[in-house]
Length: 460
Image (tube, rainbow, N blue to C red):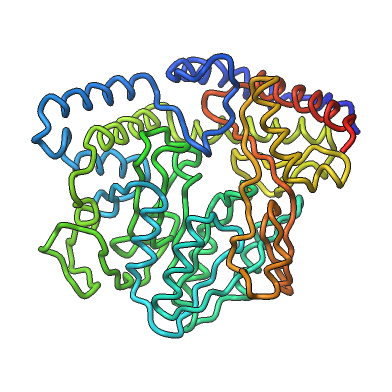
């Protein structure tokens, strides 16, 4: 095992010296428990103080006078979101969360019997459950592709893995997450979208960990549909999300708009056949449902505006540089094998660091050890991370005989060339968040080193 020195390069030192004061000041916006180093925006973010104040005021205002449906016109909120997300306001709807948006998207596509949907095996249970329901309802075949996940994997390899499985005229849609939740690997969204366009396929992206972490340019992504969380990295209230529907031909996607049936809307002045006439504000139609909590909606607009004020490119750079430094320190301390995600090609990296620091196979492969490590890290060192959560409930399920090849806790992947079952890594995940610092990354690595030493000394 390396000594853990992990020296910082001169360029890294200069970057952190320049940006640390900015993000130290930004960190003061968050009322996180000072006794805990919170490395888990991917579970749920923390609302900034300025947003939280207006949110509480909005709740109080609604309690005093419950009659108004919205504290702020929905078009205003959607415009504030659209500005920072690189989209037109008519392409942005407010959803309840990523799962809600995915359900609307996948159930709204005009499927035909015998269509195929091409999906990565590494999807979140919420996404794969929706795909399974959709496939059963419409007679759609689920086809998987294997994700290159080696440390030296490249975006070219990822694109080629998709190319091998896409079938023009048969593949109706590609569905994938970016970043992928089990190991934090980002995918080359723009290139996958271009590949889908060549094949005449629709693209659907689960961006639960995209908004708020990555500078979003949705129109430039070429993706047809995005489902994005408002309460994770974007740090809005729970029960908020962003649904993007491409509503015109863009340079990044000049293909005709796919027919799309609106599944949830109180609007009646809309097409009922899946078509979209010129100047149709589909974002407005998708945002008209019941009596949503208007204080939540306004707070989502507030936090998006705050992110724009700090600078989304700047936030992406900060979180990604922190994550890179953390990976560097993990490798120096525990070796290359400790990381469970690509680390060379910057296109495939995000602010989610996926790792397993245990040196012996028995502890690396134990879900119980994984859980105990996280619990003790919080209890004894005051650091909260995530991990596990990858059960055997993937696309390949009993009675399929291959289901046994995807045991509890392993990330369910397939080989890019053969599609043979290729699960890997009992994952631990640490997030480099906007409120975190270099010092906290170092504190985390030292705590991990100490705890691994204690747990390794124990007899299993």
